[in-house]
Image 1: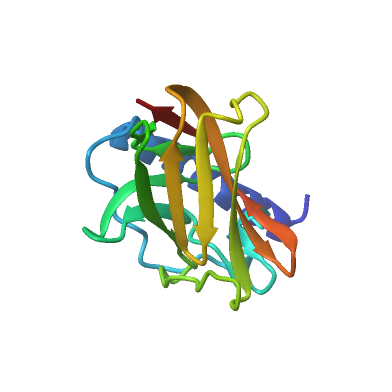
Image 2: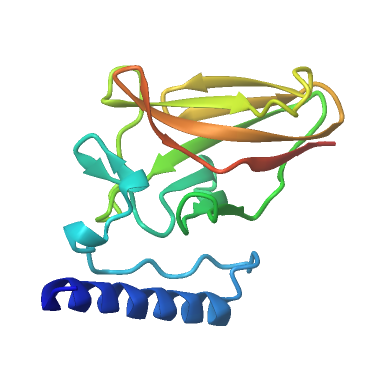
Length: 181
């Protein structure tokens, strides 16, 4: 291993150890307050390839949030740890039976700036049920960055969120636990 490769490898190991320590301190088990976002943009070599969106890069900690558009409060958000390790905080997403709930999708870039989402924008949102989720659990409608959920049958399931670019999936969320009560 050359000196440069060894140095880069060592930096990655140290960053991973620091990240695990931070997660242990933070608890990463669904506390009430979202942790602070990092203020520095990562080096290009440190960016998770799953966060790259055709010329844009999603935030490395909390790339996607669902928030109440009236109260501007975060309802749930993806905590990104890499493929297979990422999860949603503040779940399950609760939808009342025979009622609607409208949420806003906020995708953040690496500078923590919102990425415009909509039919006329470069990126669009798609929401779909997992295979295990009953088709009649809830109805989902997407209009630009707004998602309307309507609970139609009491039960639980999972939803996944996609960011699309030119009709192709650019990013996929981990499953979000959803409860209709």
